[in-house]
Image (cartoon, rainbow, N blue to C red; front, side, top):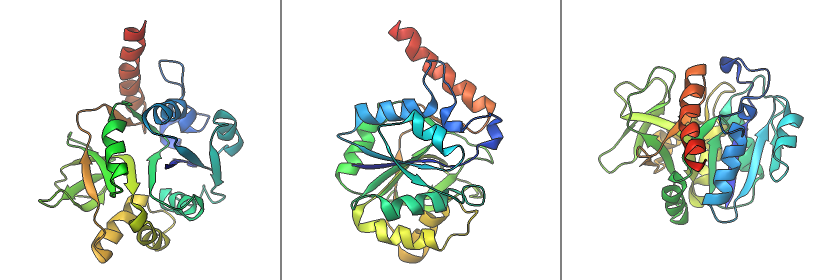
Length: 235
């Protein structure tokens, strides 16, 4: 199973001196290490490729079991170009990818794995109220994503940064990522493929599970509260 973690960015909003995926959590693991542990425990033989850029060598030392793709233009580009690099280089087939700052309940991978097995493109979403910074979505009556961006008005909820492109849809997404500007997020590539190529992307609700993208200090606090529960129960 191809898995890509997008970890090239500088993460300036969190204000840390190191790459955001290396931010330590309450259980002593970094954000990236909890991702890698979750993936190894929840998926069958995942082949993980990490897109690196900012402090690339530091990230690579942190995950010796992974493969790596280098986005040498990490200071000028956003996640659309990091994902594009990965999709051009990882082995054929469908690709599950996640942002390098997502802290999540590993149990959600049971639901994700079932959809990956069906090889159907999806975006993981929750239906919580979300703010201006979050990527929001709208969907059709049959559950397919229609709009996907931070600027969506009257969104149904938030896209949480865990996504899958089916093997049959991969070339279409690559084409639309190529058409993105350097500053576009990868969601723009998905939205463009939906709008102009009719790409069928399911809004996969994982609302019953904890997941947070750590952009700001408050997000990190939420993540640590949840991680702390696990540490306490394990003790």
